[in-house]
Length: 151
Length: 151
Length: 85
Length: 85
Image 1: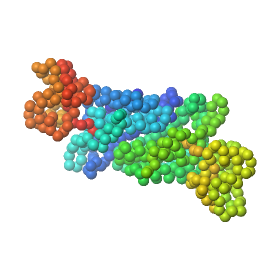
Image 2: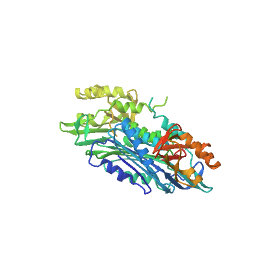
Image 3: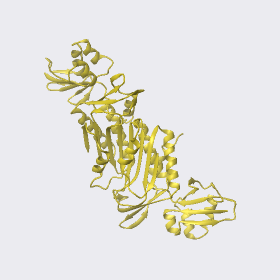
Image 4: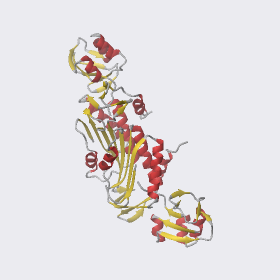
C-alpha cells in the first residue's frame, strides 16, 4: 500500500509496475487518473491550485484505503494526490487497485475515489479570466459517497 | 476510439498519452488491465493461450464500445486485447475510458469489460502440470453482464 | 447454396479443421437445422454440437440464436462460450 | 488548557493566519462552543464560522462533529467542505 501527497507529477506505468513486481496473483488492475479540465462551470480554467492539511491528509487517505481493503479482496493499492499549482490537462490524482478479480478492483477503486472526494482534506482554487475562486463541494460527490454506506 | 487485437504487448502510458493528446476536456481516465494469474481453479498455470475469431472479434469489440458510448458521456475509449501464448503476470487486455466525469468513466469501463467477457469471441486454454485445458465460461461473468441490461 | 463454416477452440481441436466450404440444396436454412445436418456426420460432431457444450453460433460475424436463417454466401461459425478478457 | 488551531482554504485567506496557539480557562470544550467563542472576535470570524459555509472541524486529524470535545494539547482545525480529487 502506498499513499503519497506530493507536488511532483506521477507516472502511472511506474506505479503499476511496482505493484505487479514479484507477484503473479494479480488478475485485475483498475486505475483512475484525474486530470485538470480546461473548462469548469462554463468558465475557462487557466490554473488550479490545490491546498491540503499536511498530516491529516495522509491519515484520511490511509483510513479510506484500509476501509476499501476490509470490504473487497484488495491485493495492493496506491493513492497519489498532487498539491500546489497545476495547469489544464495535468494529472491531479491517481488511485490504482490490484485484485485477483475485476469486480473487486473496480469497486474498491471507485470507493476510494468517492471517499477521497468527500473525506480527504484537499481544497481547490481555480484561476479564470474573472479571477480566483475556491470551489464548492458538489452534491453529486456526497451522493456518490453515500451509496457505499452499509445498512 | 481504438480497438486492437494483437500478439504484442501494450503500453498503458502510451495509450493514455495518445488519448489525452491535444485535448483538455478530459477530467477522468479509468483503465482496466487484465493479467495472467499463476493460479486458477486451484492449479498452477504456466502458460495461457488465447485464440480468437479474426474479423468478428474487432466487430464485436467495436459494437461493445459504441454501446458504452451511447450510454455514458465517453470522450474516448481504447481496447487492446492480446492473443497467442502468454506467461503468468503478462498483460492480457486493456480497456481505457476518458470522460469529463469519473462516474461516467468508471461505468463505461466496467461495462466494456463485462460485455467483452461474454460477447467477444476469445477463448482461453491453460497449461497446467496435468496438461492443457480449455476454460469454461463463468456464471459470474454472465451475471456481471446481465446487470447492465436496460429494462 | 454455398456457405463457409468456421470453428474455434475445443471444436476446432476435436473436428481437426478450422474452415470448410459447404454446398447445400436448400435456399435457406436455420442455424438449428444446419447443426442437425452436421451432427449426422459422426458421433464426434453430434457430441460437440448437441451435447453439453452450449455451442454458440455466428453468421457473418454476428452472434445469433438457433432460429437465425443462413442464406447463400454466408459465413457461419461455431464455437464454445467465449472466455476472453 | 492550551490548544493549537489550524485553518485552511477560504478561512485561511479571510482570517489571514494559518495557525494559532490558544489558551482557554476551560478543561474541556465542545467544538461548537469553541466556534461560538471565536465567532465573537469579529464579524469576519462570525460570518465564516456560523454563516453559510458549513465549516467542518477536525480534532487531532480526525473529522468530527460539533459535539466533539476538545481537551488540553489538542490540534483543532477549521476548513470548508473538501474538494480534492
